[in-house]
Image (cartoon, rainbow, N blue to C red):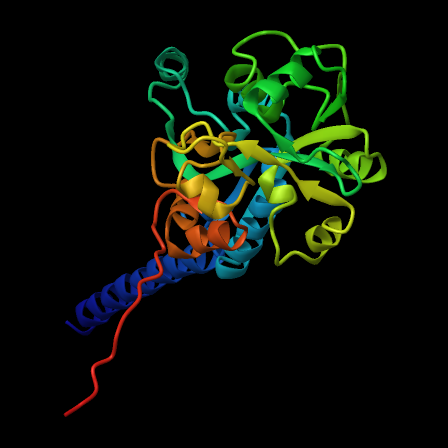
Length: 319
């Protein structure tokens, strides 16, 4: 009987040792699997990094938008490339570019092509309204133009040298061809500079030239650099074709764009390739909401998503 009891106790002890060994091995393997979990590589509205392409004529105001956005969302990294409008649309076809900011939206045919390639349609809409500013040297004798006079200059009928903001198909070039020349070709007197900055530099040194640039390059009165331009160049006044009164002229400004008085106003579009809410959506929302729209307003563009009206009010004295 004693031998039998010892054998039973030994069996119990062996079972306990096996159980301890099993849990010990299990704990060992669990503790050894200490590799950190991989983060989800997909970006979100407030985290991650993406590439966007922007029409160079909007560079000053978009630089301000991105500066504030990165400050508000430090976990984001938006890599921006400033190019001609045609180059931006070419970038939109590549997988690496998530968004473009240009002066026109997609046609139904273009949207259908993207839908066939992506299985969904890109989003697009207007963020603000800009303008093509006509600039002349401070010493120029002419700073007031009718639309017919601008047409004569751009077509070459009047051979004054006109300087454009790029050597490729920029939004300024396309807009002037569509809106002023109605599809006709430029005259040989129309020349191309490297970019918008160079247009300002060239016109500021020659009173016999006329230049065409985006308003955000020359219209921001809070920008010290642009304020210095005013000593060398002038914003020309252009005939108001929508005004009921005749012989009305307007310079490009937030007010004249808003009320349709300046005839060379144009939209600033976003075109976004996202089928789910990512960083591109976050940036689009930022530029569409109050902070982003105020930045457009401060840059003297006309916000398209929010109206910031000044309302007069009276405070009634207490009885």
